Length: 503
Image (cartoon, rainbow, N blue to C red; front, side, top):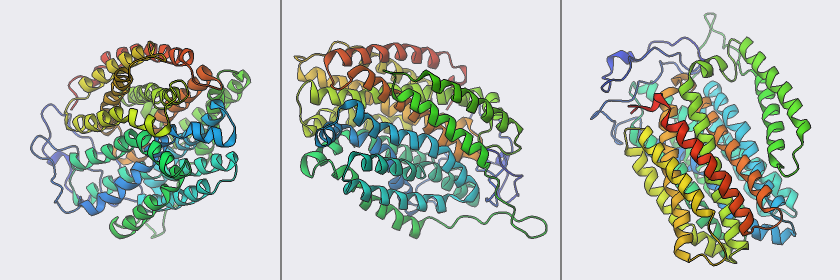
C-alpha cells in the first residue's frame, strides 16, 4: 500500500479551502498509474461538489453503484434460502453454513488483493474482469447439480464481487486527481447506500425469490445485474490513466508483491478454516497460522513496496482501530442476519417468504439510517449509538421463545437495522479520513476483509450454537456472546480519542 512520487498536475492541496480545525494536508504519493497528485481533502462546509459538476456525473457513478451492491447483496440474500437448500440436498445447518463461509473467505482474501491490483493496474480493468467472474458464478449456481457446485459458485461469486468496491473507490480517486477536486460527499454517500441498502434488503429479496422461483433464483439474479453493470462500465467509466514511464521511455515493471499476497492468502485461509468449526476446533491449525503470519510480517517489513504496509498501520492507530471496530460490529450484525432468520424458519415455522417480510423492518431501518449516517458530520456519535443498539438488540434476543409476540420479533430485527446503517457509513468515513489517498483501493479492501472475518466468525458461532437445527437454546447462546461483544464494542468506541471532533 505504497505509491510513487507524484507528478504535479493539479493545484496543491494546500490551495483548497479546508474545513475548520482540519489538519494541514500533507502531500501524498500517487498511485503508480495516476498521472496526477492525490485527490484533494474533503471540501469545507458549503463547498461540496454538486452531482451536475463534470467529472462526477450519474453516468460515471451508475456502474460503480450497481457493481458495488453485488457483494453485500449476496452476503445476506442467501440467509432466507439456507433452509430450502438444506432440505433440497438433505443436509443440516452446519453444512449449509459453508455457503456463507466460502463467500466470506474468498471476499476477505480477494478484497485487498483486487484493491491492490486496482491501484496498480487500473480500476476499470479490475472492475470489468470482476463482473465477468460474477456472471460465470451465477450460471454455475443456477444449474448446480450438487451441493459441491454451489460451493464453487459462491467461491467464484466472492472473488468476482470483491473487485467492485475497491475499484470504485480507486475510480473516484482517479477522477478527483484528473479534475483537481475532492470527490463529492454525495457520491460517497450513494456508494455507501448501495452497499448498505443491498445488504439490508438481501433477506427480504432472497425470501421473495425463494418463494416465487425457488432457491436457484438467488444465484441466477446475479447474471442480469452483472451484465447491466458491465455494459454501463464499458460505456461510461473512463479508460484507466496510462502508467508512468521511466526516464528512458520504458514502462516500469509492476510491483505487486506476489509473495506477500500468497502469504496473506495462506495465513487468512488457515485462520478461516480454524474459525469454521469451533465446535470441534482443530488446534493444530494455529501452528501453521503462526508460522505464515510471522513470515508475512517479516516479508512485508523488508519490502520497499509491500502488499500490506504494516509500518503505516502500526503508525496509524486510528485506521487500525477502525478495522477492528468494523469487524466486531459485523460479527454481531451477521449473527442476526443468519442466526435469527434460521431460528424464525426452523423454531417458529415461518416460510422463507414470511421470514423475509419479518426482516423488512430491519431492512428499512438500515436503509434510512445509512442515508442519515451519510449526512452526519461526526463519526463518534453515530457509532456510539449503533453500538448501544447492537448490545440492546442482542439482549432482546436472549428472551425470545416459541411464543414471543410478533411485534417483539419485528422490534428485534429493527434493533439491528439501525446500527447496520450507522456503522457502515461511519466506518467508511473513518477509512476515508485516515487512509493514505494513494492506496485507498487496498485500504478499502482491508476494511471489507475485517468485515468478512467478523462474518466468518459469526457463521462459526451460529454453527456452534445450533448444530443441525436452530432452536431457542442456540439462539440464546449466540445472543449472550453477542451481548458481551457489544459491551466491548461500546468501550472501544467511546474511548477512541481519534473520533472526538472528527468530521
